[in-house]
Length: 441
Image (cartoon, rainbow, N blue to C red; front, side, top):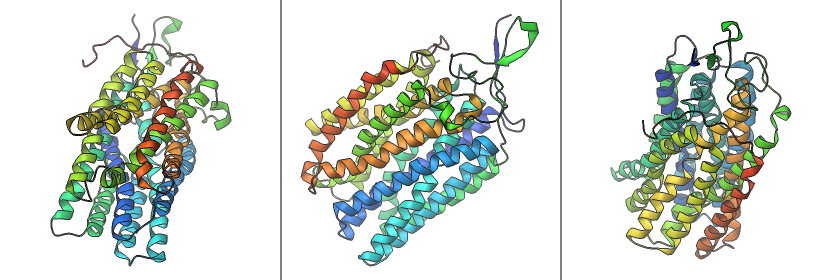
């Protein structure tokens, strides 16, 4: 008898419902995260915030997000209730936006600066919840044959949030509403969404991993054994979660390092793009800025499902390497061109850059036991990807030497650094090609 995969979750939650509510969480989380660099840009324009303060705000946000992610991962793998924790993270992130509102509403000065830094800390903690939790829920709910596709669909909603929020922000602000009041409106949307997600999947308990019913072996069910170090790495998937140290295999360490460097480079660039557009492309703080940022983020809406399916079909290490090179080349092209060429380059930069979610977390599924996926995600996405985000804005800020005129040079240096990570691809173990399926079927 041919092997038949059976993916199971909490009996009261279908995979479709789980994907729908986790996708809503991804949409809201990534949409609200957009506000951090934009609020920093508003502070720079309206409050005269220096490049040093902008760098500090971005760094505090990303450091908090990276550092708290491991705590979230360990708690989730030990206690479950990942759905409720997703809602709680969105609530905290929304409270961070309320802090930014207070900073923008305050008179320029030390009090406004301190409020902005405190808001960045709270928002960073809130943003640390979604990616390890949402990724883990999907990894546990979907079998190996469809996991990358599901992560890609989920990731597309995150990209959709990043793409829509810039334009929505300026549209709402144009309706006789101040930019500060616009921030508080979106914070209210975040709180409402947290309540909806708590209702939808708040009762989601520890999900059981997908099982493979194989012929032979007395007809017993056994945990999927698709890779030598992945799903079956530690036997019974219902046991206690692994320690972090036991998960630090060569493949996990290499993947975390690659995620860290490429994120440091690309998110470092993305964090400074609004200021680059206003100071070097001379767009000004207007709806045109919002539309341009939307164009960049929109590329990931298509890119995430595409790279998710590629992760299911081909060697994920090679796909990740090509994705990295694509991001590096397109940002270099964007710097070199203007007009239509620049717009096309920016779209493809977003297509590659914002498609890492399904690739990185699909590899995590191969390299750590299923019962420890949230912690594994927190290592690779939290410590690696988000940790790189924490350092990226600081490095780009230092490379400007205090002048926005040096941003192009800083972008070139960061893109070259990210491209160099493809040399580390052989350090990761090769994983099996899971399915033979049409790319878009």
